[in-house]
Length: 90
Picture 1 (spheres, one colour):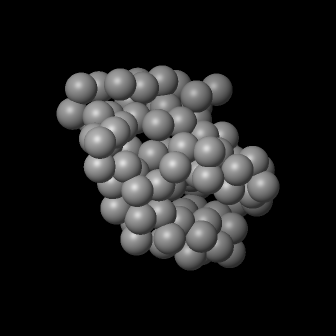
Picture 2: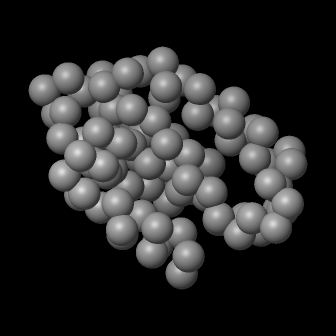
């Protein structure tokens, strides 16, 4: 974590268990990273809408309550991937 200026907390929108682990990873970041680190919550695999198990609104609310930015991406079709990295760096 030393020297990191940004972090992407990524979960799979089709696997709720990965979303449930986000809180633990956030705590880990806050315990060990610089207090000014920029953190973005990223719901990945947005191309799997038909398999979604994590509602977008639920994740957005979690991000808002924890002072995180939020985006959904798809590595498969490149949706918002570059945007996520650009946003974390600006």
